[in-house]
Image 1: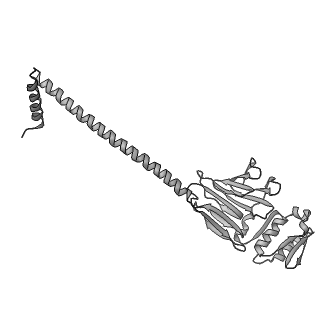
Image 2: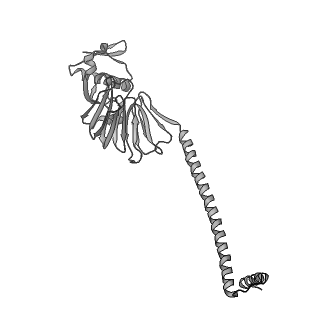
Image 3: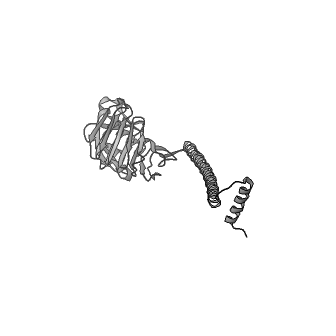
Length: 295
């Protein structure tokens, strides 16, 4: 059987005879093989180049489809709503590992993609949050008057629609607070700081406070830490399911602040009001199934 080298020689000598020219046969045959091998290498290079180009196109198209598909999925994420009805409280774990407690009459709203693309939520009411640390995705809560942004910490955020003030109490870490009523006003607060915004004037204040009891409501207690009387009245309404009115919206009553800690399971609303009345600053009475607070 003729081997490859002999076959090349036969081809070469046939070509040589056809041209009837005189050559150095060994050198000529070597040049012939080099050209043939070069042709094979070039064809292989072109083939590999085409394959690589095709793969690159497939990768580009696939990645583009993935990006587009991911965006479509993201755009179609539904909102998740969690709500604690009046008289109840909720403890829940969020998709990012954050633990949240929602007080009576509180609602939070966040996307199904929470913890993947962002960690943003809206709040109406009061919540205590132990935020799972994630420095790449900040955790933020937004309300009409105030927003907070953190990476990982513990804080209490209260902003019911009918409250006079929006309040944040920080137990650990740091929190960036934005005054949404004055968008250029921001402040970083630290442990045991309390920041509140007057929802009428938009004025924001930061004070150092004892925040130890702020989250007592998560275990069924009722605490006031220098809170305005109108907000205390609302808190009592939500806790005891009663109606409380401040007489004639007296400006003096509207500016009063109190502190104290109570247990709604063992103390009635009148017991709490008796405590406030013993300060000598207010009085209360019942009028047509409604509690009225006066000077």
